[in-house]
Image 1 (cartoon, rainbow, N blue to C red):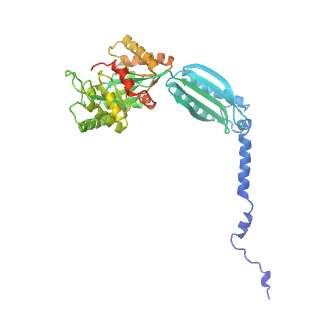
Image 2 (image 1 turned 60 degrees about the vertical axis):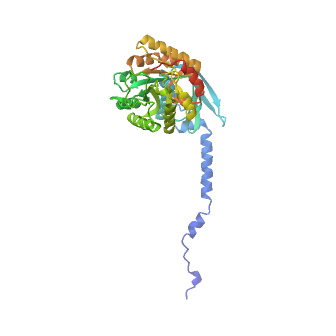
Image 3 (image 1 turned 180 degrees about the horizontal axis):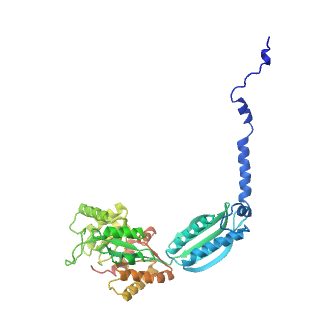
Length: 402
């Protein structure tokens, strides 16, 4: 007779696996990984030898990496207007040392392009970089580009862009023709183009300028006090109701793509009308657009209407091309530069003429040498400015009736 106690009993499914897993494998692996990374990231020299960018020749040292990084910075910085430079080092929290290269540059469109190119070339060479804007204030900004090897920072490119003032160029009357378009595209700084609605070249020119990185405004036709002036299609008049003004704005905005804001075309009658300006500005505020008063009349109602509506607006400081002569336009640009340095910002308005656009490009280095940053009009609205009342008092004296 078989002894039933001697027959091996089948082990219930999973019992062996549960017994084998009693060893704390997950805590063990976690602790091992923690020790590995702590050792790896605490030794910059080990990091340099472990993660070798392909562009670096032996010996694989921190110094060889810094030499390559500086070469990349120098290559891309050729177009920068550098006012000063310095080198040094910075002690890190883990008692490591990071190389620091500081550059003070003149404000220009090239600064952002330079930083982008440096980061791209470092990435292509196998480096990890992090860009951080430390501060962006009215007087300037500081940007740090930190390069890492194996998780440890080894190089900081520190760029200081000092800004004495900001200037915005607005070019009116875009849409009549494309004749000045090549000169517009050739301007190597931010320009805001104010496009009239419903003209033969309005939409096409706006699309081309936007594609080349420029800013677009609606150049809103408004009623002039001069009866001899033929009103443009889409003109807002003082006889319109608030509802009609809103509908006219709808129609005009639909005719011009990529609009960021509005300024007035003509308007020496309509811009004096408190009700009309309040209706216009209330509608623009609802849509999220900014407004620039072209100051075509001394007693513009835009400023008081803006206070009631609660919309910050700005106004033109200098007309650039009342005379279509290069010497005159350069003189007006010089006046704009002086106004900007005195008030910390200024807006110059010209027209879609080749002579005006060429003069702006010719005078651009003079603005940059004076640490004046040329910006889109929209950037002037991003920072806290003076009260509308103060700006109104300053602009009224320079009005030209149109």
